[in-house]
Amino acid sequence: MDTGTTAARLVAHLTEIGPVAVAFSGGVDSALVLAAAARALGPDAVLAVTADSASLAAVELAAAVEFTGRLGVRHLTPGTSEPDNPAYAANGRDRCYFCKSTVLATITAVARDHGLTSVATGVNADDAHDPFRPGIRAGDEIGVRTPLRDLGMTKADVRAVSRHWALSTWDKPAMPCLASRVRYGVAITPSRLARVERAEAAVRAWLSHTDTPTRDLRVRDLGDIARVELDPELVGRPEIAPALTGIVRAEGFERVELAVFRSGALNHEPTR
Image (cartoon, rainbow, N blue to C red; front, top):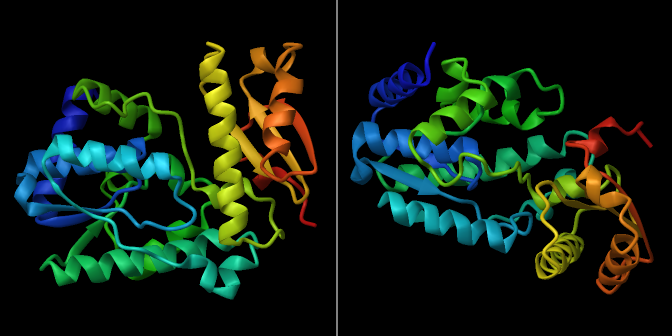
């Protein structure tokens, strides 16, 4: 199926759903759902809702605000307090379930307050087959809509349609929540999430200042140790390790190690 046809099917599907609130994280998937809804229904029939929590980096919230502004849709940013839930704070492998339960319940309530009965997320067909996505179950239990998954759209499809529509997010790297940077079993606290956010922002700033381009970057919190994951060609460069070690230690980590970026790296560690 060509990209134009895929795009048309998505718009038609959002037309069938009708006025909708989109759980908008600012990532490529939810951005496409939001853009499709605006095309299908008109901006006035669409509400973007971004949960403003300790696990959302400030730079991501700012990008979400800018994107919704360009689309001309209403955008609300209700606060959520996932770390107040002991099951979430314990940071077990089901953490994402408790996170999404809180976030989607909040977004659903906001939607209803604005007269909307449908809530859609950016879950795609690849996500549905990912064994490390317990948050999808939370969405299914609440009854949110998943137009990308319903149409069998993969991440590649999402990027292709986003590019077809000239969305600024079409090639945006994956940027999961800050809690995903914390090793399972290490308690999630607002201060720990803030430390990860500061460290990652400082690393990005240094790389930008030194004209060192990078696509994928994570600062992972392993407890007292931070692991900075970078594009493969950067890890072995002699000036990188000492500079980034100093930068990250300044944010409160005792030790720092460098590694090649691996998506979802903490999911593949053995249970401790």
